[in-house]
Amino acid sequence: MTTDSMSARRRATTRDYIRIARLDHWIKNLFIMPGFFAAYVLTETETGTSPLVMRLLAAFLATSLVASSNYVINEWLDAKYDRFHPVKKLRPVVVAELRFPYVMAEYALLAILGLVLSLFISPLFFFMSLWLFVMGIVYNVKPLRTKDVPYLDALSESVNNMIRLLMGWFVVTNTSLPPCSLVLGYWMCGAFLMATKRFAEYRMINNPSQAGLYRKSFQLYTEPSLMVSSFCYALAAMFFIGIFLVKYRVELVFSIPFLIALFGNYISLAYQDDSAAQKPEKLYHEKGLMMLSIAFGIALVLGFCVKLPWLGIFVSNSLISIP
Image (cartoon, rainbow, N blue to C red; front, side, top):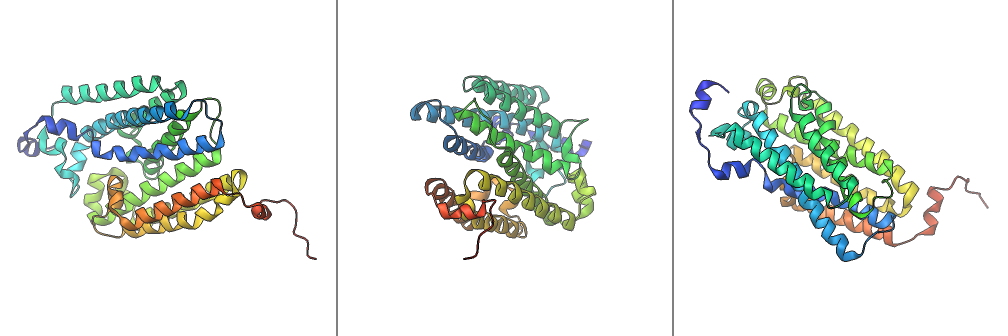
């Protein structure tokens, strides 16, 4: 920051240190739930229902603590860039004089609490938590700082969604891995969300020079390139998810129209000014998106619960004979 901007900052409060942990973003950690349900349906559970629920609650808390440690380091290292963003320029690290030792202490405390709690869930869950923590360093800290590299920024940030899927899976079982088609599909869904978020931000700033000062990768992005990347990630997601449902539960094919509608609805949000596409933690305010999500969830449940043998024609290797 410049000397003028630093001298204009106010004294930091305890609330400022709490805010940089972004507790309101904890809702994103519900992304562990698909992994949890997939493991519950596809594997034999190793514990009873009550212990499983307790492990799930502990897993959500552990994931949230590690994610908050990543948010803390993100806010601290992005302060000099966020001042060029119309909304993020009001973040605590930009407008208040937060002290580096206190920020680092908060960063370490959140990470340690999350990782220690992860040890009580399962060994593999702990390694996923550690991976999530390391991704915060890869994404934010130089010389790696993948958030500054076009395309790698969205792909590396969306790895966190894939990690959350694995965390949910390892709450249920530690004796098997989830299908790679499901893992890759979930990763690409996350990449779609991240690319669309960047498109919405770039469009909202509406000034390539200022956008490049806020996010270095924006110096090489354009609106068309961001939207094309978002479209490609959506196609990749549908490809891998299609492989998963054909191999494991063809009845899930009926959920695909709702997933396509979700992708379309999310893109339409990106074209709205100051939309929730820029703030995924606020997506629950979008009624249309939530209704589609509920419909998609119901279709998934029915797909796992109802067996339709005639759908075998879609996965059969034999040609259909004409009478």
